[in-house]
Image (cartoon, rainbow, N blue to C red):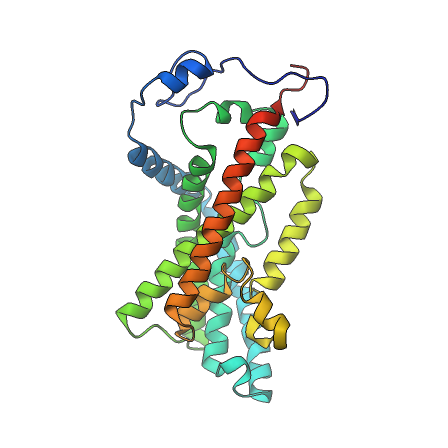
Length: 300
């Protein structure tokens, strides 16, 4: 499957679909066919589907939790040594630094910080994206709903065990007030959306680049370095530190972690996350619209 290749015509025919909410006939007929399923229940079922889909890989998730825990312990000892040498660095004490370590380890799976998590690149290459584009539902929202289910499952299975182990071995801080918990959970939800928005744009780029390996590696570097996954972004000095704190990658890890620790202004932090969620989803919607005009089938 290729996108925008010269000399090939666009898809205008109908495609079969297993979607129970899809209308029969051509694309035009489907546009005129009333939905037989309400929008909200459809996406709620997709969230459940994403959760159950990844719940089938229990051993893989548990192996990921074990790996995250081991690297979390190694990171914790490193951060303890740094904070013993420089007490109060970045406004954290040692307990905050250890808590930061295990909270960010818990974010690796849900935020998919090393890239991937979406099947769009494979579906573009195989041509199956054509079926996705004629469904009577937004490709972006469809994919987002499945990704939310994936993130929820991985947070439970891959995220919570490292935090529990960190609490057992080192002791970590826990939000003391219900308002702090509410701010953190809201920030976590926005972080999932920001992460999806970024990965969705990377996935759509395959339609023009044909090979996503280079852009995937670049995305992984940016996400791990500028999100706060490696070290707290507060360690970066001057204008550079101010800049990285307002980039979208910080909204995936550093900002929700600060909400967990209670070291960030809640309104301002959530506003930055919400802004990036809207911007990235908006760009994703434009990208989806663009591929509708560019997508062609190899030889079709």
